[in-house]
Length: 377
Image (cartoon, rainbow, N blue to C red):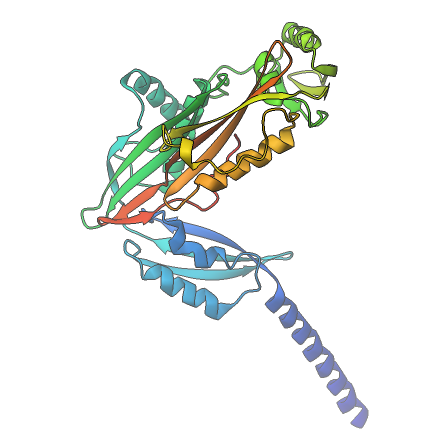
């Protein structure tokens, strides 16, 4: 009997230790967050920041409950809850929110009358974009933003798009306005399927990794016919090789093509001689149109310096920080021209435009994510 009791005690102890270790491991596992929404939930990032802060943290029930109470205190949200699900490799904390459905009474795309038919055609192809008569949905609104941005790029327009949403939960209606803020022009980008016919052979990958810091990429790209996600053409590649050979500031240049079938991989090899900078210009667009002259910070590169992409990128970041402030989004575009004398003219275009805005029952809120301005330029 004694032996049996001791054995039982040992087994019980081992089970308790195993359970405690499992519980400890479960308690210290980091959670991934997800959100499930029903109805027209207000798209105001600040309201849900406490939930985003729970991502990749150990599950904390008290913090989760406090966060939920905070979210439910805002107008336009009927009810909500959260649930924790355990999986073999991770845990998922899911926030569920419910709001009334709002009927979209008006949608202003911000485009000209001449562009309106093309915009509506692209939105119809998308299928998930917002349309008048729909229930308001911020994901559909984002799809509309993406279609507008794609339309602008296909026209060679580098622009910012700001959005104002008017959400009335008392009348159960919504109105959305987009406004386009043009920056400097660029080469048009090809529309991709399903918005355009697919290429027989696609430039599916474009590798610019083998390019030194002295090579002025923005200038070189504008001279080339071969484009990423464009249709492959051996004639275009031969044209581009000839163009590169004519650029006297390049000491080495080559384009290699790999792949077969329906896509190709393009790799560019460039090495440049040092290029002296002749002139640096900074221009303002959008909210800064005609207002940038007396507000410039001390520039970190000057005429007479040797051009480098890294130094240009550092100055672009400095300009972005100098003109960033609450209620504003800022993008900086850097363009390089190489003169016949082999000197570089640099132009930095600073585009500022308003943050996204959401009105809930007439009260104004900031509707922009903090990192929305980190777009490729």
